[in-house]
Length: 84
Image (cartoon, rainbow, N blue to C red; front, side, top):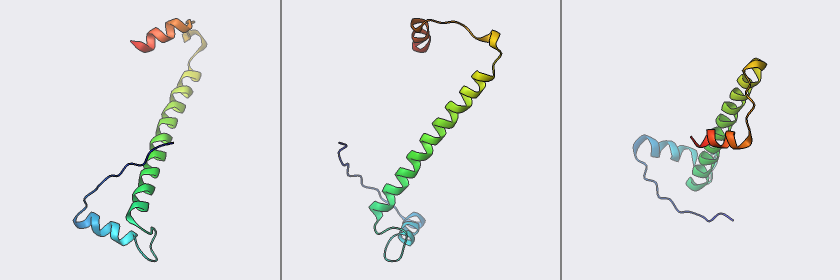
């Protein structure tokens, strides 16, 4: 189970005003913590989607390569190559 971490963030000016406009009664979020957690979740999802799309693009290029460009490698050779 992950442990909770307390983080203090100072906002001023336009950022503080923007957060205030999204938090409170009849707003998108009940409190600032809920808003920040949602922003972090969305950023995590974005980063995961970006990594997946990068992997998908690399696999697409690999599968599109001509058969004669493939090399037979042992597991040990792959591990050694990836450590370099």
